[in-house]
Length: 117
Length: 397
Image 1 (cartoon, rainbow over the protein chains, first blue to last red):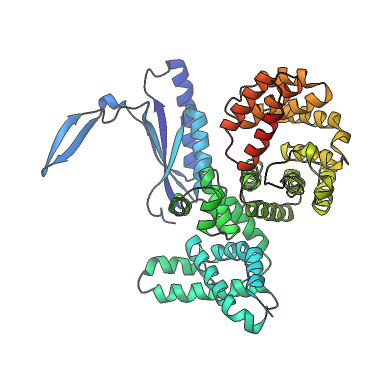
Image 2 (image 1 turned 30 degrees about the vertical axis):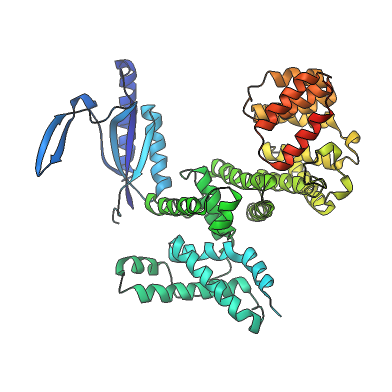
């Protein structure tokens, strides 16, 4: 078994209205239930935007605290799902469901090492 | 008496099979490759004296497996965990010949996994199943050897790190994944069509292998038939000065009748199945050409029908362009030119070459010359350039 990070790639800009978001949330709840029942769920959650982030930068043995965002781009990390899967095909099958639920691109990244079992 | 070329032939035929079995035993592509190469090096020393063993593939697989297990045991003290993990997959039982077929299929699906870049899929397939060297693959794709080496290293690292599985996909995923595999094989064939002939041979070998392993997939049969029928014209396609000879001008006595018979037999088998797909239809088009004793006798009406069918199931501008070529023969160049001019294919050399030919036939010389020039500007192959230049000279402005 391996751990995979499913990274929700959210476009920078206005999020969709509450109607749309409500639908997405319903679908996400259902997907998370399915992940738990399959024993694949480790953690999942949405993130505040990069305007809420803070960056800590080591400098000369000290650490500098600065306001985010740390990088300009067209996409940002919108949320993550951390899952456990036997191989990439299984992880991609979950990623596909997450893409359909969120209507957003999903990056699937393997963690270093094994997840045990 | 065994000679170098004899062993080379065994290598070509059995390399992929041996690597596929060893990957399953060892769970690691690099160790498997190295072990198989070791085994062939041993064969090269030994077979000239002992003669060919009764089952060369079995000999190579057993030797490679023993080498790999020895090596892993030797290194076990140095890199305990890795070696132990690999040894878990290497039971002491001798390798069986039975599941060998499935191993090669597994390896093809792993090499052609959609999570790998197309270039990486092609390179891996040629390397692991075809046994081509990194230098050979680099030459065929016109990139420096170091670039190709890096591409292969990265692809193998991704297979390992991302956990790309070593197995044939589930039934639900099979149609999609098989399309990806066939695309890789066809890309290898087309690269060979335009340059290195050895790639066509390799693509045909892969096509035959897939057809043998997946006899119930009509598109697999269709792709093999398509490649055979195109390959049958290899000799006739080149003129005395290496220039490209187009289909209507080819000396049909130089077509390879054996390949044609095999290809047409496969097309007929597909037709009986009645589950048409893009490769089968393209193969059927080629079969119509192969049927015609002369260019004038070509049944263009049937070809047009086939392109109509292809447009219905897999429409694309390139298919529309090919269909227009058939329209020119059935209805006339004027009607074809209208269709061609409506296509957005400005960066495609064949688009300009087809336009140039239609304009030439319509007596619109100045425009034809301009279209030939546009085609030439996009054409790298010397053989094709020679053909286009010759054609351009026949145009009266």
